[in-house]
Length: 120
Image (cartoon, rainbow, N blue to C red; front, side):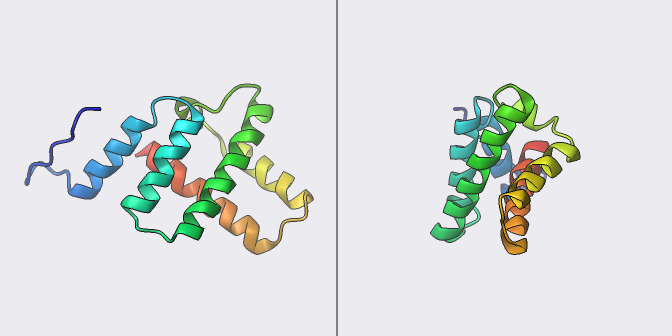
């Protein structure tokens, strides 16, 4: 993977460079995207191990749902084109599975964190 160059004054700070590196790593499949995202959470955001594991588990479930819901693997390109109704369908399914309000909120937080990096 090519190294990213941070030059002062070019408008791109270190955080922007890190996000660009993550997006570059996410140009393959869903599992590679998930691995790159969890590495980002651990290495860059310095999230606790249990939090990262919870996000990974949440997103793996979301990817599994999307595989069935969309009828295709959730590639990064496809993730970038998701609609709110796709996410709502997943959350509604999880609600029917009996998840609590707190668990639903964490699911949504996990999804939003991933999608915000893909869309930047």
